[in-house]
Amino acid sequence: EREVNKQKPIKNPNTAGAVPCMKMTPPLPPRCEGDPNPTAEVPAFCQLVNFPTARYFGNCVMCDDAEFSIPKQNKGVCNNCDVAIWVINPSGMQIKWCKGCKNFRKWIDFGVKGYSSKCERCRNQQASRYASQKSKNESMTPDGALAMLPPQQHHHLETNL
Image 1 (cartoon, one colour):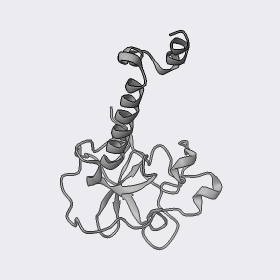
Image 2 (cartoon, one colour):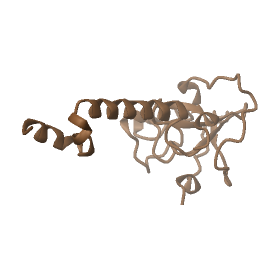
Image 3 (cartoon, rainbow, N blue to C red):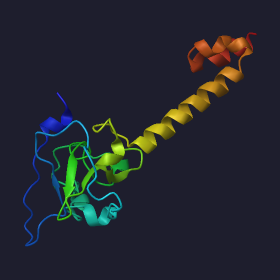
Image 4 (cartoon, one colour):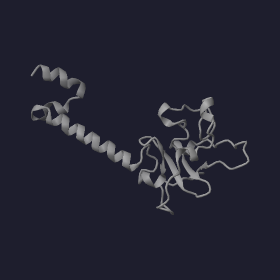
């Protein structure tokens, strides 16, 4: 079962105003179907967080909960919230956390893999880095023979050649 189907709702804030973002309510489509305002920019991270001071208490800045772990590189967003699709109030823009950018991106930026942990740009960068590293490893070996072995075995065999 997808993690997005197990989403825990956020708390109602004790403030008079509405929170900047709400989790999209199920049923969720497999990907973003379209961007109603393609020229709109995602607001700055500080404008998107629902509970800016929650981080100081070890809670998530989006749901104000301490139930889920918060990776250090996630800027205070817990593991439950970093897989959620969020809707910005009042614009209705749909956003999702990108673990590559370490920021919120438009959900449409995740392409056909709407529930991926990285946006298309970060997935493409990762793929090109992998291809570059792979071709570099193959070019450093005679006839590419060592390229078939795991990298940790390359040094051992290269010293015995």
